Amino acid sequence: MSYDRYVSPLSERYASKEMQYVFSPDKKFKTWRRLWIALAETEKELGLSITQEQIDELKAHAEDINYEVAKEREKVVRHDVMSHVYAYGQQCPKAKGIIHLGATSCYVGDNTDIIVMSEALEIVRKKLINVIAELAKFANNYKNQPTLAFTHFQPAQPTTVGKRATLWMQEFLMDLQDLEYVKSTLKLLGSKGTTGTQASFLELFDGDQEKIDQIDPMIAKKLGFEACYPVSGQTYSRKVDTRVLNVLAGIAASAHKFSNDIRLLQHLKEVEEPFEKTQIGSSAMAYKRNPMRSERIASLSRYVMIDALNPAITSATQWFERTLDDSANKRLSVPEGFLAIDGILDLCLNVVDGLVVYPKVIEKRLMSELPFMATENIMMDAVKAGGDRQELHERIRELSMEAGRNVKEKGLDNNLLDLIAADPAFGLNEEELKKTMDPAKYVGRAPLQVENFLKKVVDPVLEANKDVLGMTAEINV
Image (cartoon, rainbow, N blue to C red):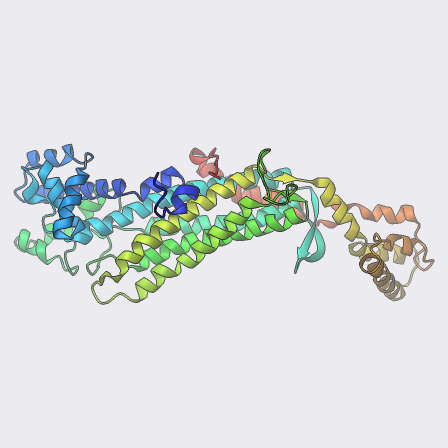
């Protein structure tokens, strides 16, 4: 490793080796050669004078790329595609005359981009499913654990820890639906020539329209795709990149929401992300246990959400059949979006897998607020005992204000139950009032909602994808 130049933290700290390889030069240039082979095979099958010997020669050198030859050639011609055509031809002297026949640079460049994005989306899909699976286990384990819910980050009617996890899960499931849809619609550019008219193939095939119609479908099939885009300029529409990165931005938004909730819960000491025995939380405050992983999720997620603007603006500003101001931006925005979301999902998987819940802390906070939330039940019990509903409502309001002042101004515990027990208007003693303090009475249908959600929504997804389950994630630092 060189320490005297910039190295992207996406490679060094965040993204997995698997995702890094998908966007590596080696992956790109080997895919170029796969595409040149597919083109040559298609042209041979459609009647051009290309021999099997030439095809076999190309296949024999599909993997052993002579990078130094290409690099030196590019210094001379200043063209990456032609440099690699030249290098491939050096290894395949019998076939060099038919490499890239009828194609333009975008044949290898754009088709490779689609292939790479499709493979990268599959990695993201697998990791997203595993995050959902871990959240499902967590939700099931804690479906009955009452906890204080918050609206506006103010105490609200209780929910359960497991029910809260279903809210995170549901958003990730939406992202999975978006991902699978966009991935299913990806098509190759095919081979359409310099302005998308296939004029070069009219010349090569002497105007045989039926043969030209077969070129794109045959190439697509050889590369594992169902079809090519029916029309194009020189490039596939850059709106494709926009759709792909919008999927990544959606996942990032869900991950950010999840990580924010974990950070807030860790502040409340109710839930805690994994913290290793030798981990240092602060260089100054040795006692601190900072939610580093969740903070990193939030940080990278903001990057991905903003990164989605790059292809959107690029798509909007393309000129006619093509302009090259997309290239430099594309080389950055697409790989970095994927590398970042890869790191985000590894972090999410690591956090969910090691989440620690503190029921005693949860119970203490809930019980400090529950008397306020139990007042409607208390009022109904008092009415059944002969009280006047309207008068009791006013007394509860007054006593709640007094209890609130005791908590906020005097720092005392919530003594609302004591105040109600001492008020003859209610006719209820402490024992009767304490019966209303079972938190499970106030979580509504939350446990059942968790069960139904897991059974009807999540389990079918996990069952359909059981072959990819079981992933774990180690984070670098």
